[in-house]
Image (cartoon, rainbow, N blue to C red):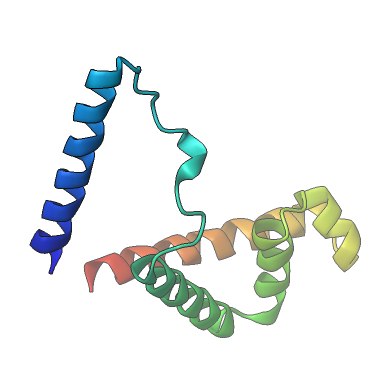
Amino acid sequence: MRTWLYGITRHIASNHRRRDRRKGSILEPLQPDLTDPHPDPLERAADAQAAMFVERFLAKLDTKKREVFLLAFMEEMTIPEVAVALSIPLNTAYTRFRRARAEFQRALERRHHE
């Protein structure tokens, strides 16, 4: 099927080039925004697997670290903002985030070795 479609595409492109040479028209490059903005099935599957990985990681993380990790990493809040939002000392917020991030990194490394 793929070979057949490629052959048809190649034949049509050849006809267009031949016609354009006869008419003397200049080919314009394709616009970069013509790519399909929707993810293909493989990308969707990879996204779903990544989401499941993050969900499993968060479920295993203790509550205090999870709160800081979600606000800082996922919601992109600064650590001082996280500390204020959770009413915890700034250094505590930094420590929890650093530890959660280290656990996440270790979980990623284990995932890649599986």
